Length: 86
Image (cartoon, rainbow, N blue to C red; front, side):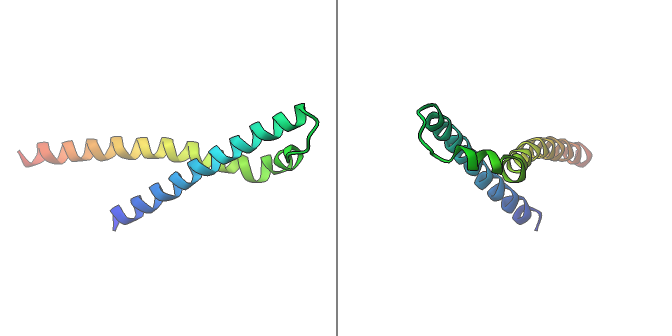
């Protein structure tokens, strides 16, 4: 059960990575459009920054930190169990 939950979390974080990359792409395109005086959605991107994009980036960072902590603790627990079995 733990592995299924962990796989689901990893799947969601992977999807979030691609969403954040798409956000960045939209930002670059919108910024280039603004520099060229062409409306490519930068104003909409800016309005969505706080309610949508910041939480997505925060979830990505928290997931990366949480994943690292989980893997370190799992390794530590596994090593501890191995020593207890010997």
